[in-house]
Amino acid sequence: CCTIGCGGVDKSSNTDMETLLPKNNNLEEDDEDDDDEHEIDAYEIGIMETYHRLWSVVKLPAVQSLILILLTYRLPCALSDNVKFLKAVEFGLSKQTTALLSPTIILPLGILVPIIGTKIWQGYPLKQFMFAYKLRVTVVALVDVLMLLAVRSFRGGNNILIGGETTSRLIFWGLLIASTALQAIVHSLQFNAQMTFFAHRVDPAIGGSYMTLLNTFGNLGGTWPSSAVMYMIGQFTIPPECSVGEDGTEVCTGGRDAYFPLQLVLSTLGCVWIFVMSKRVQNIAELPDDAWRTHIENEDEEEMHQLKKGGKHA
Image 1 (cartoon, rainbow, N blue to C red):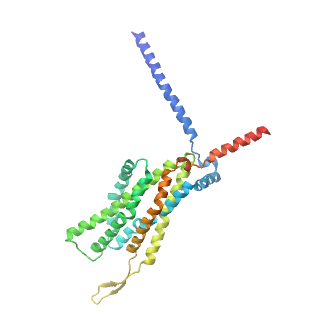
Image 2 (tube, helix red, strand yellow; image 1 turned 135 degrees about the horizontal axis):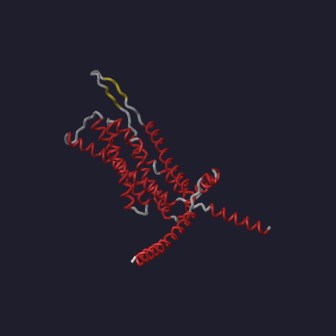
């Protein structure tokens, strides 16, 4: 019995080893594939060669089109991104209320929206990007304007009531929550689509540096519009002239708030951007992976091969 039992154990052990051997071969093949697409670190090739490779990336036509998109698409959204809540506080919204919006609305949506968006637009990140952008320059801008008008009417000292105090509160909070939620949704959709597209298009040989380069242009595209709209708001806003009346109350007359006309101009600019740039966005989405590769390593290998040939002939 022992002999039969031990033989059975040995046989089962051999069978298990045989089933494991193909898996080890597969692992070796995977390791070889990983070596072929090994990402080169900056310390391996030096800082000068790293910048040389990045400059080769910038010269690619596909990357130049992407950079143009990244540097321009944020300008029509700059008021909503940078000035909206500052203007709401100026109109009477408390800073405590604005601070409360982040953990209750923005943070949960920032977690859930990318998951849902990936399931809906699976494999088509730039379609997701454009869908969110169209909402961002139209619906979100309109809701932002309505929200600011509600804040100025209900919290700015005017005490304008529509349909009673309860209805006015519902309108105020509904517009405030809608404005915050919509902005968080479209921002998360676009950021998720942008990062997904970057990750699928970068050259694996210089993936980290490639991603850093694209993210740098993406951050720059969000920074300069912020400074531009802040400057324009300051230049075109005329403060009202205020004086103290006989009864001791302050009376302000005149003045001009540049936010609302500027929002109209930027929303129109956003619609023009969609009309002009949507075909470019579609084109870069349809480009093959080879259009995003520099092929520097292949050129270096060919040069080394030619040098070896020349040495042999000599």
